[in-house]
Image (cartoon, rainbow, N blue to C red; front, side, top):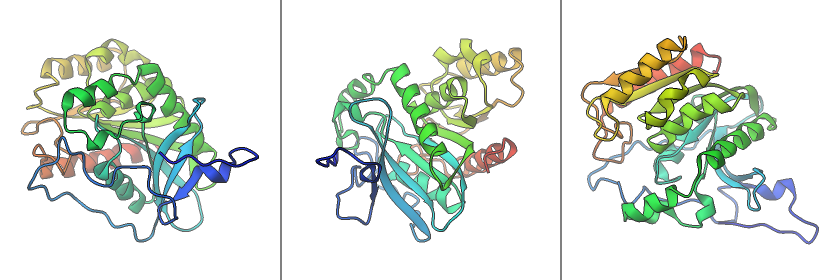
Length: 283
């Protein structure tokens, strides 16, 4: 990770790196080695018309939170989306998601939630080692990093701080549900196949509407959990929140670099995401 210092201390401009600058990127250049399919043909979004940056977000830790940012060029303020990674950290897929949002007029930021370990997660191929690193990121720590990210967005001159959404995949899907419970700056969330079991009893805590996108063939998230969460949402009167289940989709159906990718369902889910954000003021 890049560390910038001055004799008189770190200044705000030191925590703001452009990809085109002389400083090497803080993030892994390719796709997560543990999951990428040999025959994958992932979506690649060009960065023309965009500003791509790497920054550090103050979060109260000794070392601040690294983040990848994509936003439209030009002046003006834009709605925002926090993009939460899978267990593999910030790699090419997550960065491309950010660019997709930026092409649609959003400021998209992907924090590197696992940075404290000092491990380059996307470069690992052993799932046991990956899960060991992921397990070090506590719920309170991650939720605090999300709140730090939304606070950072509110302070940026190019961001509409009252229009912040969040979306996340796999591990990040659960983060989305929690963020809608604990971060008052989040206006809407979209969770892609995130673990539900520990969150069902907390459905009543939701302060922002969440759309869940899940696959019926997911071997890690049973449909009993999905149905239980839907029932909990209804019982709590959370009418703006719902879960859509894709009959032919597996876990990771949006991940276009993985064997589980389902193009039709990924496209439909993306359209639903945009509709959910628009309906809830994140557009």
